[in-house]
Length: 343
Image 1: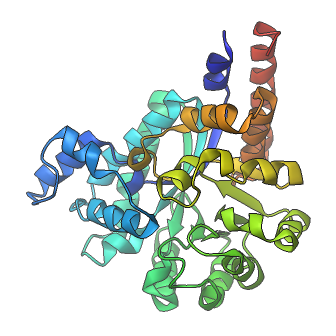
Image 2 (image 1 turned 180 degrees about the vertical axis):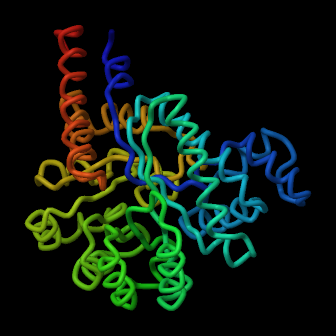
């Protein structure tokens, strides 16, 4: 087995992946046909070409067009199953999948039926591939804290497999601080706390998320590299940074992977994980993320495995399951090492 085969065989965890951003181009066409929608793609080639972005705001526009293609609650079963099937092919064992519920509720879809459909996809993938998955609800900062509270009401009514909340959306226009009461209530509900920050805005966005929302994880966090004091704060508080290198490249958050701050963060001692964010939209998967870190930022195989263990340790699984998964990952890594002595 060569180094590429070794990296592909590594057991992995994905912490930061959006269900809608995982829709396969083929499934996007199916959604448009099912809903009898007029969209700017009629062929598979069109759909693949559609996923090209000038910058982060343009990506949000494309993302919005894709979510508009979802017109029925039960469509989430296929979307979720296929997302997990793709992850399972990369030897991903556990996923925390982000679902922007209100994006669809405001269009008239039923929250409970969507959660049921997502969970049918999760159960189907678990039965077929052994992969595990929990749900993260993205409150979507654009809607404001009042809607965030409404979404928490929905989670209270039906929180099957929902383990955490997040705020994605337009980071530059909607800072984290106003969400403080929402996050306080989410914490009281027993939910884990995450926030997209430092992707499309600067270090101040991350500062607000950690100070006012008491987050356990930061999604992306690229801008922290420009603030040594912030990096020290994240290190001391043990706040995990969920990094998505290919996403950051495709949305022009970084100009090249060689300039991505992931290596800087790892050398600083920060707890960093790697995920795909929106794999179909960025034409990536977990194997590719790991391979590009190896090729462009010189991550060794043991360093890549450390990222896997970080993702297990900082996951929102129950503690007993985390210990079991960590032990199984260590055994698998040793088995791979024994088969490849020179790597």
